[in-house]
Image 1 (tube, rainbow, N blue to C red):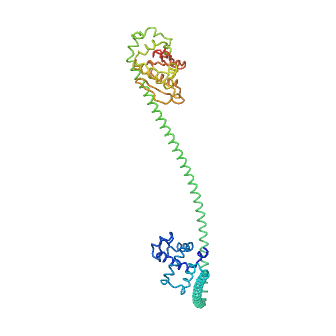
Image 2 (image 1 turned 180 degrees about the horizontal axis):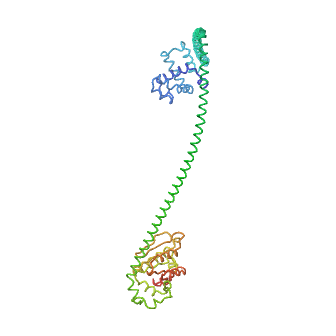
Image 3 (image 1 turned 90 degrees about the vertical axis):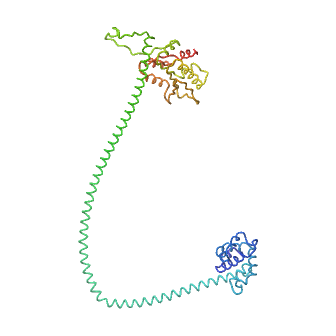
Length: 428
């Protein structure tokens, strides 16, 4: 038997085969039941046939062993079902399970029976519909006859009513034309009002936009003025703090150094001399003096409140050229710490930030270690440090760079070559 024959079985035969297989699944030994059908054994036979019809027919078509087991069980229990001789569907099912040559003929017979039953049902339904339509036609014919009679009776009255309605229609037509003329006039007036309203609205929106632009401009100017005021206030505060810091350092320097400076520099204690009061002359701006030997530097460091600013790599590369930059910084910072501890001076050492290598630097007490920002040279930082100090404080700039030394001298600081500081350290 071909798979197509199993797939095209008539509905009564499919149902009967499913019922037979469902009953057999519950009674056969588990070994004779395909694994795919064993879960169906938990259901009642009717539910097996209804739920698992596709699986049951699929296994019957695919498994000759299952077909044989079902046929054997059915042959032994056919008394419980309708005998094949009295039921053509049962006979076709038995022929199909046994794979007999007449199975196709019996299936065709069942198919023909099903088609005949279907055709008879369709014919009976068509006859019923025809009878219903005939009765409906007779009823409609009767109603039509009655309507024609009523129409004839109402014809004369209808003509009079039609004439009355025509007169009313003419009157309504006149009123409609008058209403249309009034509507057209109202429409023109409405268009004019709409144009006027649009012009006023455009003018109002333009005025609103101008006012909004003016308000935005005022707000922008106010915001800029506020930002400028805040910036000016912040700049003033920074300048005030810098001035206060410089003033405090200057007062401290003047308070503690006046006596020492007079003694060390052999200054007179009196007021101005007669030569100081001669007119027609002016004094030059004070400039720092150069220190060229360790003894002079040591004497200068003995003054009160001295600030020593060191050009870091200029000194370290001259004193420790064999070391790495990191080791040079550590060596120099350590010796500056000893100098600060011995003399009590304020020490600031500045390195170029671009040359900084990984690793922490030691920061001894009394030594300020600075690195210039990216794009900023250490020379510029040294110049700013000198300018930031108040006039009157002793500032020493240690560098062998001629430009740095000249700038320090012009700004009132004392330039000291790197070799002099190294000699003071004992490395001259």
